[in-house]
Image (tube, rainbow, N blue to C red):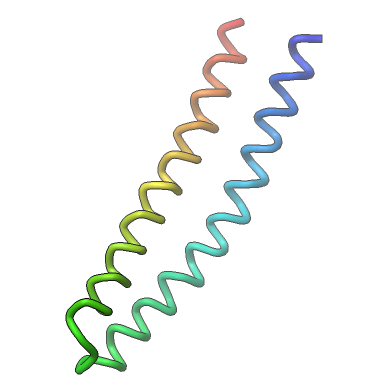
Length: 77
């Protein structure tokens, strides 16, 4: 029963990482397009876009580390 719980957790994290990666790609494309097109927008707006990209990058890394950590834990038990 323990193995199936770990499989469910790993599977859920894996699917979530796929969706998050796809959305992350769309976000990065939009941010690049925005920063390149609207060069004369206010500094605050441009900084907010950059901060959102950084926060989402950290979240994506966290999800990937979570997937790897679950695989390592399930392999050791």
